[in-house]
Length: 252
Length: 247
Ligand SMILES: Nc1ncnc2c1ncn2[C@@H]1O[C@H](COP(=O)(O)OP(=O)(O)OP(=O)(O)O)[C@@H](O)[C@H]1O
Ligand SMILES: [Mg+2]
Image 1 (cartoon, rainbow over the protein chains, first blue to last red):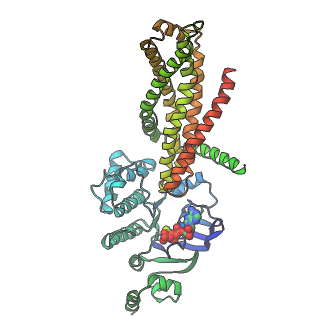
Image 2 (spheres, rainbow over the protein chains, first blue to last red):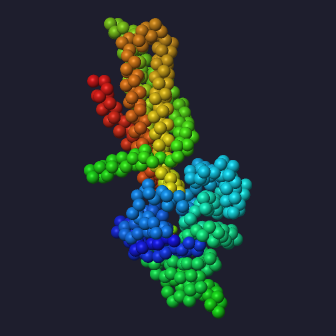
Image 3 (cartoon, each protein chain N blue to C red):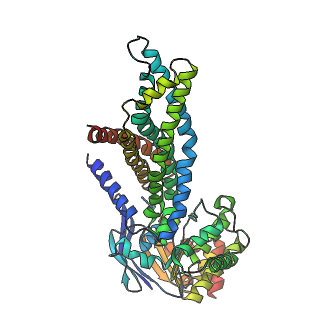
């Protein structure tokens, strides 16, 4: 479980996160949703320690991450996998080398075991046979999927995905959603997904956090979200007539 | 002024991060070999070209300035040697390399920074400073001295060849000048300087790349800053080292 306690973050006086407290549960797909610019990516980066918080604390299974220095954070970091919003693949390495990278750094597998693992991961994201392409030779969606494959290479205990299915076609998006869900349930990992994709939120949302202008204004699951009277949330999730009709159907 | 201290402090902290707690030892040899190729061998052409023409020009310049008759002919070889060994092959070659290699390093690391590749490493629990910067520093410390020696050799040979073919000196005179009051210490002095310059080029450029914020435009700015700072620091270090080593 990841516990976030009263964290705040501002950039040059511009408060981006305001006193956020929440939890992310193991074996569940935990969502962070909110409009563009509401602070979702910053929140995730604060949780994983890529940005230092101004205030507050973060606990990974009772281990206080905030007070650790960068060397002591290493142990917890090796249990994390993260998909970045822009994929962040190593551009000088091929698809295969990208996924091999964490394995080579941290596993004690033999060379052939590592290659097996790479191929298993590639298969899970439907990228078999793309081993020797460079990131620049992939489409945006393929880069995303490679990023996921790299993030899950070491079966992370904590998995963070920043917009895993933005820019994917609906079918692939569902493949990725299912993959994230499977991994979460299979390995009981604590998964945090940032998403704009209401389909995946309503389908997979075990625990949903809604950020509005830097504040956490609503928490609940995919059933509760249908019945909320939080106006900002309603406008966000059900912005159109069409979506509102769907909500009424789902409620009934 | 306070930003100067801030940056110096930040630079030293980055160096501490680079040299403490590196990653598994077995990942480095391959990285170092790649860097030796990238920052060393791929710059051989430009170093050779520069040294060739520089040696030739110094020889001709000296020859054209000693018509007076009472300056002996062997001065040509002597001057070419002194110029190449003491200053050109170390300081000037490193200044040129700071433009080529320094700019390269800063834009490579800067691009990795803005595309979150460095964050991706950090998230995995990798000491990104050490993984990215250490191999570059080690590679430069290793390969630059060889390139400087090569530059001395090419420059002096070019001088001898041009001097002879232009008819301004005989090979005997040139050789006499080369050997006149030669001390191996002068080569050592030059190589010691090179070691310092290599460190400056790679570490300062890495620093500017590593702390790039923003987008492609900032990567360009970092790259320019890397070159300018490396050059200025090389010039200052050259002055200090010369004072310490030769006087
Ligand atoms: N490094 C930074 N320096 C200054 N301001 C920043 C920085 N990173 C983010 N911000 C600001 O923080 C706010 C939230 O950004 P964030 O990237 O978290 O948005 P987001 O919710 O992830 O949006 P999107 O859905 O578009 O990705 C924005 O107003 C942004 O300008
Ligand atoms: Mg974002």
